Image 1 (cartoon, rainbow, N blue to C red):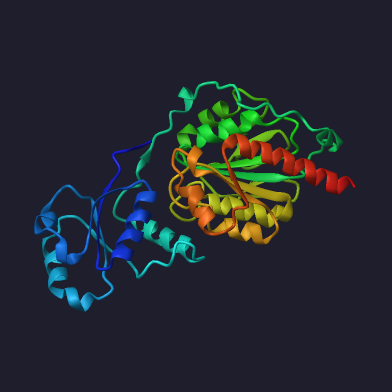
Image 2: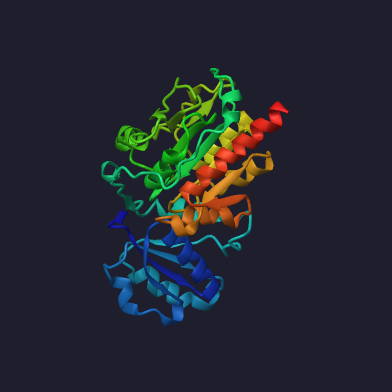
Length: 338
């Protein structure tokens, strides 16, 4: 959940821009308490302490010069002027526009605090029991993973990812790398909880760790990671770019760059749009990109944003995603063998 999120006021002189700004801001977990045009704003709001930031977008600033003078003179909280009309939500440039907006907002207000009650996630018997296909036994165990899938998650993600993993047969010949937006102090707890009720090994993917079948590596928060040809995790020596840590987009991009069509990605519940920039690029390389369906998400902004790009080839609940992955890998092995 989000607690004590910053309160945002939006002023736009077109209804469409006000709607797009409001949707983008809410998707990041902020509370929009005012959304109006300059002609209808109440002057008392300029001096109100009920806001933490004004986000202003005026396509015709010359018409609102008196209003702007009043706003600049009387506002008691910071003002962020948006950098132009938002593209359509299904435009390839929309995720970058939304990312720029968030990055600028973080110069003025803190990110909403996301609290995940990790240790309170109860053991739940999987709703489905997926048997191990015979094809999985054809895959010889080796030090280099045949397939590497990124799991991207944010708010509500731990419960969804755990449900997904709990349904999978541990013999699945896939190595997982999880990019979960979370405070770094909770990484070890997250790793222990995710695999508490299944046969997977789960640990933080620090520099030097090895991707391997039956293992879930959790991307560290402190630095960006990439991968060698053999699937060993290496630190780039740089922090994650952008407002998210770890960055799902960078994890997808680095995984896709190294493993190409042997990779895949699933975007689970979360705020924002992390993953919607690198997801289409992964899809263009011939690798699948899937997402949790909105109905089963605690917060569907993140998978919805990926779907808006057109890169998502399959959507489903965590349980259905598990079924689909097992079948996808089974068919892939059959094609390879025959």
